[in-house]
Length: 117
Length: 112
Image (cartoon, rainbow over all chains, first blue to last red; front, side, top):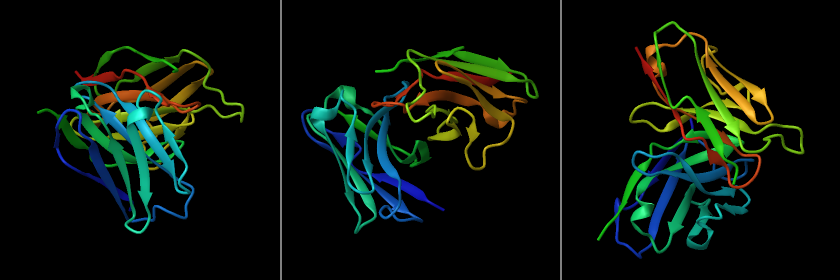
C-alpha cells in the first residue's frame, strides 16, 4: 500500500531555508495522474495548504507563501521536496506531505519543524 | 480566499447516538465542470488527518458507512449515524474548487 514519509531537520534558524523531503513507497510518483502536496499545521491550530505539484511537473502555490516556496519532484528517487525560504517563528508547524486527487487522499505521519535561534 | 465556517466548535456525543457537523462556505463550491469540491477529514488524537468524504458525499476507501456527507452550493453537513469511541478527534471540511484550497476551523468530537 502507498506510504509517504516526511524527512528533514526539526530545527531551523530564523531567516534560513526549511527543506523537507517526502519519500513515497508502495507506488510510483510519476506516470500517474496524481498531484503531490504539502500542508502544515501550527501547534494547536488548523491546517494550511502550502503547495502542490502534478506528476508532470506543474506547480501550484498558496499565494500567501508563494514568494518563499518551491516544490519539486525527483522521480529517480520517488520523492518530492519543499523549500521554504526566510523562515520566521510563524513557520513553526507540523509539515505533512500528501497524495492528492481532488482531496488529500494519503498523508504522511508529519514532521515537526521549529524555527528558533 | 474562500472561508469555511464549521459549527459547532465542539460536540460531546453518547456512543451509539448520531452526530452532525455543519460547514458553510463564503461562496459556492460548485465548479463550472458541474462537480462540487467539498471534502471532510478526521484527525484522530496524535495522528495525521485522514480523508473521510470527497466531492460532498463519496466515502473514501475503507471509511465506515456510518459516515455520510450531504449538501450543495455553500451549505454542507457531515453526519455520523452512530458514534463510536474511535470517532473522537477533530473534523475538518475543506474545499478545492479554486486555489488556494482552504480548511474549516475544525470541530472537536468527544465521547460522553
